[in-house]
Image 1 (tube, rainbow, N blue to C red):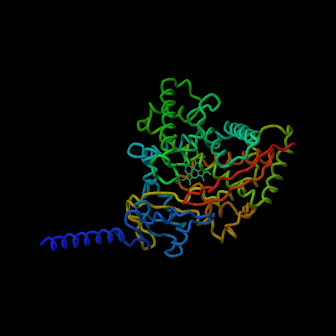
Image 2: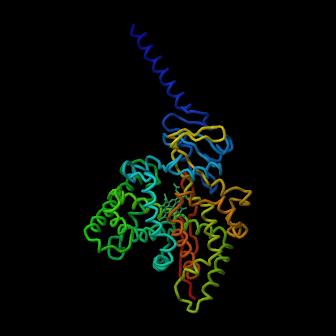
Image 3: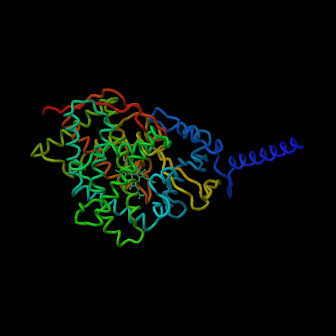
Length: 476
Ligand code: HEM
């Protein structure tokens, strides 16, 4: 009797599990799903995506599936059903549908880390997005850069390069840049004064690096340290915010200043929201700029001829000055054509943000398929940036290619800063920072790569073993 009962339980369990696996593999849809595989129960195909790819090429996870299924395929990553699109038409449709057919989406782990749930969700569309975007653009946009930020960037870059060279030590360019940008961002976001206050560069670096590590929160792991650094930073930002609410006079034209002014007038703005936004921007700024500068050092070492082109541009720029020691002007910055081509090429191959996430708000028809409502969509624009028809020999680092690429071709095939209404609000700041760094570095310093420079995508781009350089001042 017992045996029959046990057999029945096992049979029912087997049927239920088989049914569940069948449902996992064949998720519900009101139409035909784009081709693909949902992978293993629970983990989906996450592990394949996390396998490191030691090249600047598209991650094999995406490349292989595009070859097998075409430019749009379905999968399951970190427990979420997902559509991955490298189709330019669908991508530009998705960028245009912000707040209508799709909304901004972050991976669940990121939402938790940045407290982006409930009232803090950055995709609470319309009003909130417009407000936050307006504040960023006001703080970090072209006008701000022209009138006040460019000179501050130059001051920051000069002081840091001087320290790096003066230390007489081998510098990990990625980490050192990360620290430099962190101090700059902390000053402009929450008025942190690096000279009189605690040095928080390493705390910010720990927070940023840990965010990209495996989210295992036990003592000894990078992620655990990240959580500690995050708590410390949050406490610091909270204290600054409270202080600013009490004494708005202490404001210095930074993000908190603006946010505190609006705290009383904008109904949705809460203290928690302000803190989350500050932490998010800290991450966006530090990681993107430091990875790009790290890549610049890698490419200088691998393609030394690139340096000669840039040296000629910066020498000519300085020779035109009446006072050779005068500071970089806005017009000079705007005249750096070869430097901009170099930056474009770093961004094209670096492809710092491998995918842009959205969530379908309704069923989206596509070429006879249906993207179901509620599914995550990952827009991959990097396939365009590696398209050999537009970028000949696409894996070669060649800034000279940009002189033959017209504006229209570039805008359709080169989207390192995303597209549509969510296009990067820090793009101008990132380019100005990078160009100023190149300007001071090339005109005043020499360097040699000592070791490192190997990269891996997991799927975010990381330096495996840093990028170590010896820097010294030129004797002009
Ligand atoms: C190399 C440097 C950078 C790259 C490649 C980059 C890339 C991107 C991309 C692809 C997006 C679109 C995300 C989406 O559509 O979901 C984005 C958005 C954003 N980025 Fe950047 N970024 C860079 C630097 C920065 C910096 C320095 C800041 C600091 C102010 C910044 C702030 C933002 C913000 C606020 C958004 C959201 C804009 C919105 O939702 O309206 N980024 N970035």
